[in-house]
Amino acid sequence: MKKNIIFELVKKEEARQRQMIGLIPSENHISPEVSAVLSSSLSSKYAEGYPGRRYYEGNQIIDEIENLAKERIKKLFGVPHANVQPYSGSPANSAVQFALLELGDTMMGLALASGGHLTHGHPKVTFSGRYFRSVQYGLDDRARIDFDQVRELALKHQPKLMIIGNTAYPFLMDFKKFREIAEEVGAYVLADISHVTGLVIAGEHPNPVPYVDVVMSTTHKTFRGPRGAMILVTAAGLKRDPELSDKIDKAVFPALQGGPHNATTAGIAIAAAEAMTPAFKRYGKQIRRNADALAAALQKQGLKLVGDGTETHLMLIDLTNYGQGFGLQVAFAMDVAGIYANRNTIPHEPMSPFYPSGVRLGTPMVTTRGMKEKEMRQIAAWIARVVEIVKDEQLPADKKLRQQFIRDFRAKASKNKQLLAIRKEVEKMASKFPLFTWK
Ligand SMILES: *Cc1c(COP(=O)(O)O)cnc(C)c1O
Image 1 (tube, protein in one colour):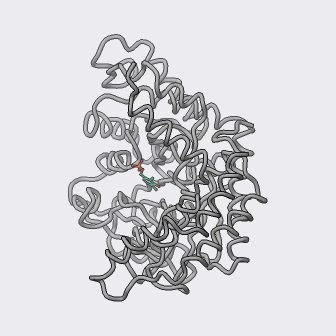
Image 2 (tube, rainbow, N blue to C red):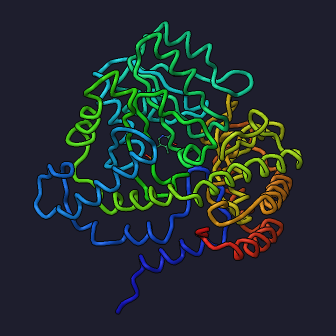
């Protein structure tokens, strides 16, 4: 048979992941079981509708799978209703907004620049910001959610929906406090725990379920399942609005989606079973220990962290004392050195999302591979060396020169001997840790 170029590329990507160290806090390595169902015959089936109410024949087994996934998720979180069909986190947030808001209604979310997600009402470029009246809250001087501002804005704008959730916020979310404010204005509360689901399950992060009406989570981040999402309706939510589950289900299908991705549904069912084990709790606890170790070691190396540390799986290096807009160079150089992360804005970002002043790091992936505190200290030392190697590569002040500067920098850094020497060390360590360690 002719060589299949896509298979070759998949192999290459697998090798890339194996040889490098991944610190992107929103990524994870799935278990062999989750991986197996994703490439199964379940992908060949249409199942528009919900179990017992499909628009296609032949869904007897798919119904069993989706029911199992739903039951396991409900049990795991102690909620009366779950929808596991959203294609991913962004469409799931859109579904919640479609279910609870009318065109032009007011909603509130954490601003992107403060660590919120685009779908939480980012103005102009998103569905959530264009079709609803979006009010955005931010952080205080300690880089924590500014609850005084949340309350002030809520009282002033009387939102119908308030969202608490984040993608680049290293601290715990106080769902109780948020709920109290929402109660004052009668708003629905959505907790988007996409990033921290695994920590919630492990008891390492406050649980939103007692305090919010709806919980949304992606299933591919700390939950360690397939790319997808789930929407949970809590007992509190049902009490406040007995039609809530129905509204959510109708928003997912038929309002926004067609047939569910059944292979993903099966993957969610497997990931849910994995998440119920003591091993998963140990995993969540080790993510936290590793994050603390990485944060402390980075600080010991003289690197500054936003808000001085982490209470979760992620942290943000604030590079402004080296130069504004230095995140791109550091993230690129880290990649050359075998450690991949992402450049990120920091609170009160002086530059722009394209040339931000921070780098975001997280420990879910390295923890899945079985790395511990000792490895975190080594990784911190490598990152500090990378920063030192490229510290003079600062963005030119003249905006017109920046693109060319970045092109030249990339070409030069890709061949930098010191960075490539670190890569050798990284690969040696990575080779001792398989992509998924099930223990
Ligand atoms: C990742 C994330 C999303 C979006 O998920 P996608 O699957 O990328 O669409 C939404 N909200 C939060 C808080 C996230 O971290």
